[in-house]
Image 1 (spheres, rainbow, N blue to C red):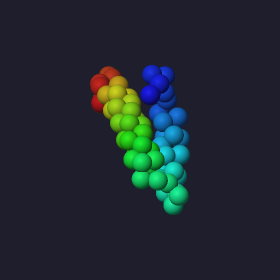
Image 2 (image 1 turned 135 degrees about the vertical axis):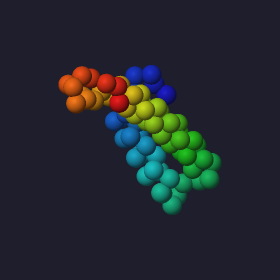
Image 3 (image 1 turned 90 degrees about the vertical axis):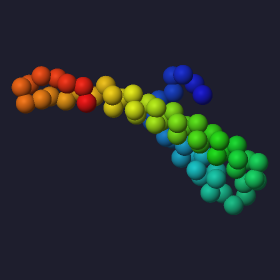
Length: 68
């Protein structure tokens, strides 16, 4: 997977993988490869979202910024 992958791009790729998996004409081997690719994309998305969540700051009642 590319290091400069965006979450949006990964979600678009994930949608394409889902469409392939939903196809009635996909072979078992291709389905397994698509599933593996989808799981990698999902892990990337989860890790990216977790990283962003940890960087989110909130303002407390004193007007100071605290990490979320």
